[in-house]
Structures are given as C-alpha cells and as structure tokens.
Image (cartoon, rainbow, N blue to C red; front, side, top):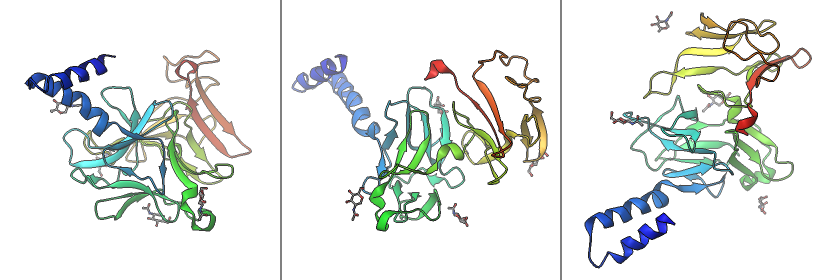
Length: 276
Ligand SMILES: *[C@@H]1O[C@H](CO)[C@@H](O)[C@H](O)[C@H]1NC(C)=O
Ligand SMILES: *[C@@H]1O[C@H](CO)[C@@H](O)[C@H](O)[C@H]1NC(C)=O
Ligand SMILES: *[C@@H]1O[C@H](CO)[C@@H](O)[C@H](O)[C@H]1NC(C)=O
Ligand SMILES: *[C@@H]1O[C@H](CO)[C@@H](O)[C@H](O)[C@H]1NC(C)=O
C-alpha cells in the first residue's frame, strides 16, 4: 500500500521535477529491480548471475554473491533472508575467493552435472566436484541446485526419485544450523567439523576447529591448528554435555547426540520446535 502510494507520488511529481521525490522514487525502485532479482533454482539453462540471489521456497534463506565489508574478496554465501545485519552461515568458495570487481562471475550447472562457480573468464574457481554423476544421456537439464527452508543447499536430480548428488550440510563452514548433523562416519571416513574464518574480511579457514572427539561417550572439542585442545564440553550425558552448566538437561532440550555402533556414526545436532 505505502509503496504504491509513494511510487504514485513519484510519477505525479515528474512534471514539477521535485528532486527529493525523484530520489525517493529511485530508492524504492532500485532494490526491487537490482538487488532482489530472485530465482528459486539453478538449472543448466538458468545460472545464478552476479546481482541475483537464490531463495528458499518460504523465503527463509538466501544465497548470492557478496563481499565482506572492506574486503577485496568476493564469495558465494548463504544467509538468513530476514536477519540484519547479514550473518553468513555457509560459503561455497571460501578458499578460492573471486575479486570483488568481478561482476561477470556466475554459479552454473556444468556439462558433467556438477555445480561450478566460474569467474569472468569462465575459469572454474570452485566446484562440487562429484565424480560419476549419472546424467541421463548427457542431459544436464535433469540436474538442478535448490535451497531448502532449513538452509541446506542441494544439488539433485530433478527426474525420477529426485536423488541428491551433493549438499552443503555435508560441508559446513563456521555455523551449524538446526537439524544439520555434526560428527563422523568411521566406515566412510567422513568427518564434519566447523572452522572459524581467518578474519572478518577473509573467510578462509582460521585456526579454530570444532568437532566431536572419537571416544564413547563423545565430547565437543575446540582445537587450535587442528590438534591443540583449547576447550572441551565434557562427555555427553544423555541430554547434555556435562561441562556446560547452562545447557538445558530436560529430556526434550532440543540437543541430541546419536551414536550408532552398527553404522559407525556419531552425530550431534539440535532442533527447536518453535523455529520450524
Ligand atoms: C562497514 O564498514 C563501514 C565503515 O567502516 C561501517 O560504517 C559500516 O557500519 C560497516 N557495515 C557493516 C554491515 O558492518
Ligand atoms: C576435485 O577432486 C579431485 C580428486 O578428488 C581433486 O584432485 C581436485 O583437487 C578437486 N577439485 C576441486 C576444485 O575441489
Ligand atoms: C532432458 O531432461 C529434461 C527434464 O527432464 C526433459 O524435459 C528433456 O526432454 C530432456 N532432453 C533430452 C534431449 O533428453
Ligand atoms: C598455530 O599456528 C600458527 C601458524 O603456524 C602459529 O603462529 C601459532 O603459534 C599456532 N598456535 C598455537 C597455539 O600453537
């Protein structure tokens, strides 16, 4: 309502050329036409270009190109759409930044079905790098990248069962989102850890690393330089880590640690019903 009224005012005052109203008009139009160019999936025929953003179906998360304040680095990042100031919760190319001046970079589905970030010269700077994607007769139209309302960025087949090829939840940065699993799988040898940014301007891996220790019961550790213990949570005791006094020990606290001897996996996660 307010928007339509103000835009109307802008149009009516063109004849009078009222400067302040002209600027009001521009300010209202710019965000919707430049910054909020939104798409809901990345496909072989629809890459994500600089200046566009990918949004989740419920508009909870947004993914796009950004430069940290005062940095010459440019990244593809993921953040909550409605939290201000923006807090980036995941990054694609954290170790391979683009120059902040590169406005021709894009995130696209490559000919082998991977999601790749290319710079202005079309050089690949980052890729999901999954081998052996079963693309039906080289038809990359059958692969798409979408953002879920839980913040998971997923590359998947869009035909058949919609099988997932790659997901950002398996490659965390410095943030663990609700329902995302942090831990390890001893059979496949995979391990999810959180790692700090080097600085506010440089998102590459810093010196702090958070992960679960390979013992039973497990505990959370913060290590420096990958091996020096800096902090530990104390072992998991059914509903909480015993070394964290403020941790809620009610049965249904929202925190869980699932240990499966059969599958060889140990995962920590959290989920609060009121956020769903
Ligand atoms: C970015 O930096 C400028 C200048 O230092 C500062 O005024 C502004 O608040 C910063 N913005 C954010 C989002 O941190
Ligand atoms: C892709 O995977 C191969 C083999 O695992 C590795 O050598 C290469 O560095 C990876 N490339 C990227 C961009 O991660
Ligand atoms: C590729 O896949 C798309 C989506 O499933 C389908 O519409 C199209 O016909 C396919 N093209 C070829 C050449 O197989
Ligand atoms: C971690 O590594 C850096 C770089 O090698 C070094 O300067 C620093 O002293 C190390 N920190 C600790 C606590 O060992």
